[in-house]
Amino acid sequence: MKLIRLIWVNLKRAVFSKRFVFAVLLVVLFEYLDIFSYLRENIESIRLGYSSRYTIVDLMQLTGNTMFWGLAFSVSLLPYSGAFVDDEKNNFLTYVTVKTNSVLYSVSTVVTCVISAFLCVVIGKIVFFSLISPVSGVCSLDALEAYGSVYESLSNGDYVLYILGNVIICGARGAFFALLAMMVSTVIKNRMVIYATPVLFYFFLVKVGYYNLHLPRYFDIGIIYISYIFGDKYEIFSVLYAIMFTLCVSVLTIFALNKKVKSLW
Image 1: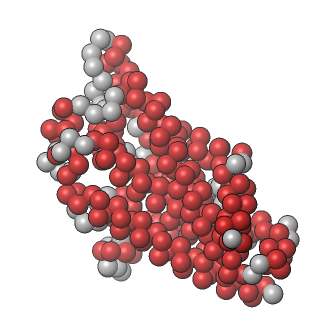
Image 2: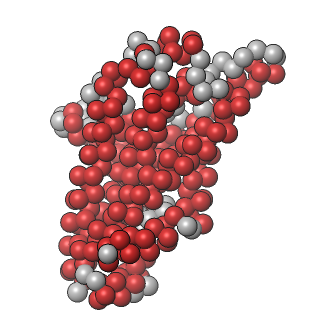
Image 3: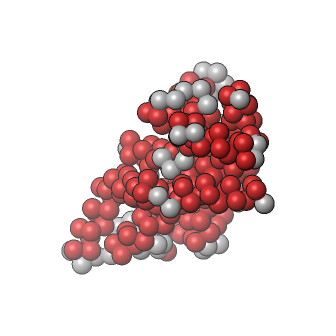
């Protein structure tokens, strides 16, 4: 019961806050800027009396070509990744650990970090899709024909399942980077460094880790959280793997945070 109460208290701090709303709005903004040129073509087509050129399913294939794509997943760090630094600074950490213990504090903090980051990205994506749907539509027969041979869900005409899987992976990606930021916060107290390090870590892994260090494929963040690690025909298994990978990182973060909290007392 203590753990549930702690998680609820933390969630109220993380989700019911101006910082969370701001982060969601940033997700929407950066998603929009990432595919702005394609949306502009859609608007122009509608203005000329034609149908939209790109549906939401089409646009999901075209994301990631600008720096705004990276900014969109990095804002998931804002709601709660710096919570440990804040708690230590305002003595909330002392109060919680006296009332409970370091393990409960660490578990509740990490769980809140995961949930708030996941919701930040997922809500942002849902709002974004809702805003662009009037000028884009969700899916078309052309999109199903173009991508049906690639993705199992689209081959069955289930574009809702395809979009849902993509949104879940994006949410898991946001949670992963939020967890990395929280790990960094156990060593570094500067908030700007905390927010910047996970993104730098990602680009290091993509550019150096997998091409030069030849890390195993199943630790390739670029494949796990951007595409489907088991291939496009196995979307569900790939989504589940991304979730399980994030949960494993959560456990590591709990250990790191708990060790740090114990060292302070």
